[in-house]
Length: 116
Image 1 (cartoon, one colour):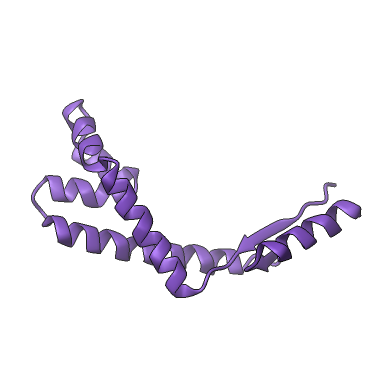
Image 2: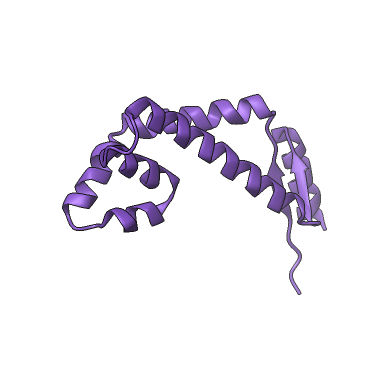
């Protein structure tokens, strides 16, 4: 019974890769490794950390000595890119998504929607 507007933002592939890489680098700069180590030291099992998500999974593998630091970063970035690709595949199957790549497109769609 409700009308709704779904917007999906698209990025060129290279921009998306750069944004993912930047996000990982920022999270690491924000001491995520220490955060995960502290969680483990406070009783969160390695198994549970693996279940929390990609960042927790790969960093906990590094902390356990299963990956070197640089290898952990590279594998994490690849895994997140693969996850983003899966998300886009899933969202593209949704028929009601209005895909935009510019803010002006989104604003026009919202303005038109609100007029209805």
